[in-house]
Length: 115
Image (cartoon, rainbow, N blue to C red; front, side, top):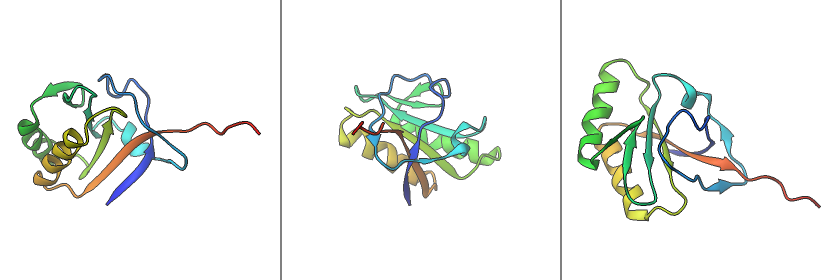
């Protein structure tokens, strides 16, 4: 299941990601937890797990290790608005292969236009 969510503090993940904007984002306070599993895909195709850059193939093992250490079985995914679809799909594939079905996509709340 995928949810559109309002993003956490920019300090939670220092990867350079410009988030897409949505009309009806929902807050996800779990993304701010210290043990939250945050994955980011940058516009140039790099992937970060928390603050660590890694290869896509290593993401599955990193997620499994966190789950073994007691992390919530949920991944918060940040994808740069200009990232390639294929890069985001690779990240989601690795998350699923790690056994995680609950993926929350983090977005920014679009500001209402003045009337």
